[in-house]
Amino acid sequence: MTTDHPSTPRTASRRTVLTAFAAAATAGTPLLAQLGSATTAHAATAAAAADVEYASNTVLYRELAGQEGTTFSRRFRRHEQFDTSMTAVAPFRRTAILALHGGGIEIGTSELCLGIAGYSPGDAVGAPILPTVHDYWMFEGLLSSGNKDLHVTSKNCDDHVALATAASHLNVLSLHGCTFDQLRLPTGSYPPAGDRRVAVVGGLNKAFRTALVTELNAAGFPAIDSLAPAWASLLSEYNGDHADNPCNRTMLRMGAQLELTTELRKSLFTDPDSRGGRAATWDKNGEFVKFRDACRRAIETVEAGQPLL
Image (cartoon, rainbow, N blue to C red):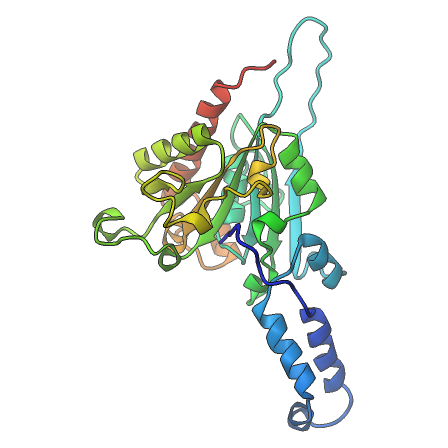
């Protein structure tokens, strides 16, 4: 889930709290006695830490120093390109794909990031499988549980590579996950037939939003424009309209994002409940490919209206 509304400032470090308890556990006293003698301050600090998120990627990286590759990971690809001709204009990559809350934070978004970018979600290296590829960046939670504690609100993302990637492209498509119930949709009238596989399309690029809504609906995935008058007030927390949202930090100062319900993301895989399961089954039921290709067609539509200057 992404939200452009202010989040609670992080006043305590989860790592500091957990380290303190780990140190106490090695002091030699029985665990129950340690827990019983824990100070009120420690308990309050632990409770506070559990209720707030990291204020930025910088804070997260500082507090989890040394844990990249075990607690979290970052992956990106920037394609090398050259223009060596004095007479012809060489093509350049106009669109980047982002997954700010990948891995176990918002499941399926890492795989979609790779797939829409033209790479295999089943290969840890990300082997290209489509003739046209896009730059991408992702942050992933790697914990066996509790990955949502690694969430950083989109507008607070300050990862240098993520922001540099956005700033050097005309378009960004940013992928996020939410639950159906969080959206509070008028289920009496939408979605059709009670289908909980919903894509909420946001971002400040109206043409990009329109293309995504059109292509996703045509592919059989219920999709709505969160900034359309019918939905604007209801979906204001999911519309990606904040100027500091990385999807809008492009050369054009506008982009697109997708908030995808859990039911939609899980429907794309035969086995959606683990990283290995998603990697092994993304191409088994056809839904992932349908969704991936709908997004890629939307990107093609937008890029077709952006001639090289």
